[in-house]
Amino acid sequence: MPGCRRRPGRHDLDHGQAHSADGPTDCWNLCCLCRRHHRIKTFARGWSFTLLPDGRLVVRTPSGVSRTTRPPGWCHDAEPDPPWLDELAPPDPLPI
Ligand SMILES: [Zn+2]
Image (cartoon, rainbow, N blue to C red; front, top):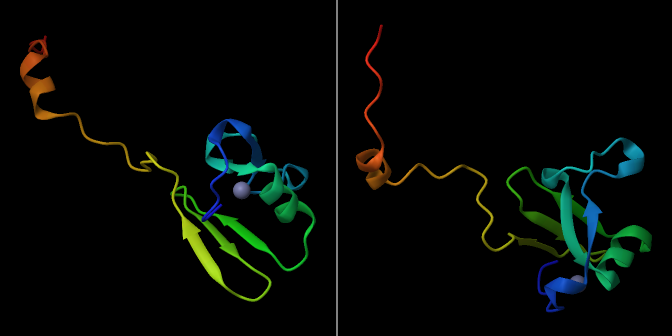
């Protein structure tokens, strides 16, 4: 949740696409919300929470203010191997 300062160990995992709407319990469909913000998402009227495929969470308040957050450390695209791995890897086998 943008701006939330609650400790990470006390969060709920919540489905971006609701489980009741066939949202899978997969990493890409889960976000961490503290209990307070989880309850706002679930029960309060006028709030919008959109979990994007790249891990960003877009939250819109009832007054229309929109904020986006990205989980720290999240990388949607796999990083390429560092060049030194190629130097340490054994050579490719010769074709038969
Ligand atoms: Zn929160």
